[in-house]
Image (cartoon, rainbow, N blue to C red; front, side):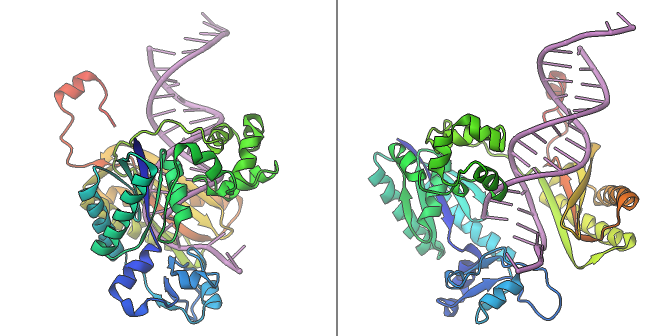
Length: 367
DNA sequence: TCTGGGGTCCTAGGACCC
DNA sequence: TCTGGGGTCCTAGGACCC
């Protein structure tokens, strides 16, 4: 029968560095910018399991991490390296499996045929060992008839394990776990469910559609189905390119000056525009977002009449949007800006031939 | 413990068209 | 002149993920 295998690399950035620096193995290692005396708003990107044991987690402010783990070794992030290792992982998987769908820099979903759960365990263990030998990186593997369950299984298998969940064990596998184990259930949804006394997936399954919908809206019904182990049919995803690209800057101290913001936005827009053009994309919409000092966010976007790859058009549109949102804020309150984001959306390949006459005759161009 | 940077998807109201 | 139901696009915001 057909199964979904879900591969999740263990502490990916940390292990990319350990591959190159084996002398750091066994030490608490953190990827991120080590806090100095200057104000820092940086967070930890990845923590070794040794560091996690003393309460350090990824996305934790670096100051807090340094307090919890003063003896930690720090390395600054090296994204080109991680992208390259990710490419090696995906290439290795593609050589051995026909249907490989990367889900992020360090995760992939595979579709495989296996006669029994035991046979699937052998496939997963073989690939896990092969990946470690060939690329030098550890991974965790989950297997199930559905990708949602396979992903949860890979989480349970961490670090370095294999967990297979056949169809008739799905409900029992899920029951004791927190609702937070379900991908897509974050802090807000979990808090809303807790208002109804629902913490575990078993409690969610028992609650029923009406209750779940009352607590979290339309999504509640499908969540209850998942909790009961009744999953929508598993389909193989169709490949599609990126839909947007963005760039963020968080200032070391909050900014109250429009001129300074405009300078930053213009520079970010040019860099983003050039990067997107290098990648071979045109964009059809531009957005600017601000995060105020109180962490609230506001955003403005504009669709373009067509699509373009011009960094100058992007820079122009971005500073206009910035002024709009800035003036609107000035009328009501006057918060300072913590973070600014420039975004391009509706990406399409630039090299795509002009709309052909056939397509044209058939109606509006496909977007 | 005051919270980076890069993404995705969903919802909902209004405009506009048939 | 007033009425309908349906579809699509645009925009803003929210939640979530790694």
